[in-house]
Image (cartoon, rainbow, N blue to C red):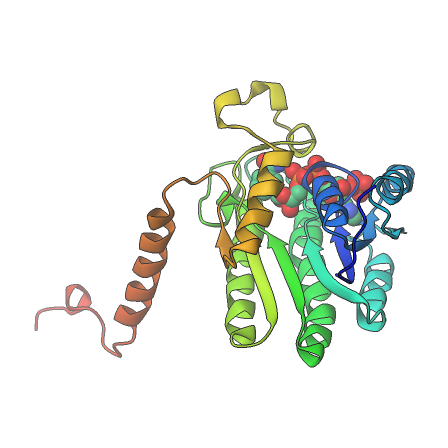
Length: 268
Ligand SMILES: NC(=O)c1ccc[n+]([C@@H]2O[C@H](COP(=O)([O-])OP(=O)(O)OC[C@H]3O[C@@H](n4cnc5c(N)ncnc54)[C@H](OP(=O)(O)O)[C@@H]3O)[C@@H](O)[C@H]2O)c1
């Protein structure tokens, strides 16, 4: 068992019953965080909290909640609003239905919006003022490489993850200069249950493009240690993001013009 002397506080991790969230729970417990783990499958959360308590000597609690259910979401919001020991929020829970919009069940469209967007923003809305008031705290929002790219089967999923990216970048600007830190993590394909649930069997993916959940989270946490605002676990050349971000800023500056571009002005 690891013994920790520094009080890291409590990390609340959503989607901790599987995939990336489960690895976040393990790694944060290893760092000495106590945990509140959120997901629907209470049996899995129980097994995970018990095993992490035994392995790392931390305290871990389950908070069973369906984040697409407003009452359950309210319970998680209440915990974030009232538990002053919470020092980290990992907004990891997310789902995907990967299919063209036409033919996707409306319930699946709604669920992606509810979990990937509404729950994430509500939890940030609860946590951020508390972290700001204490001038301490970390929010990790999990986007995707489909935050900045769209496939014919990802209109809604990319839409939700684009929201996560833009929303998180705004939060980063809001907390600049304080001791509150907001990290945006943009994973590429990672070997988790998400794919089978999304309608794309994991076994059909090109293995050479798939990262393990452990490598993805370890890279993301290394990025956090390096105070990276945006972490792309699988991208070797950091300059690619910088060029993209720079182009975004230049394009925005070019819009601040007040006149139609000359190509839209009819010759009189
Ligand atoms: N896997 C990838 O290739 C990939 C790539 C880029 C980004 N991401 C993002 O990474 C994050 C984690 O995904 P993952 O790949 O680890 O997926 P995963 O293995 O399917 O795990 C998803 C987690 O979210 C929880 N969850 C799903 N619906 C929920 C609901 N209604 N209420 C509460 N919890 C719910 C699940 O728990 P329960 O079922 O027990 O509720 C599970 O713990 C997501 O935001 C995903 O979009 C994944």
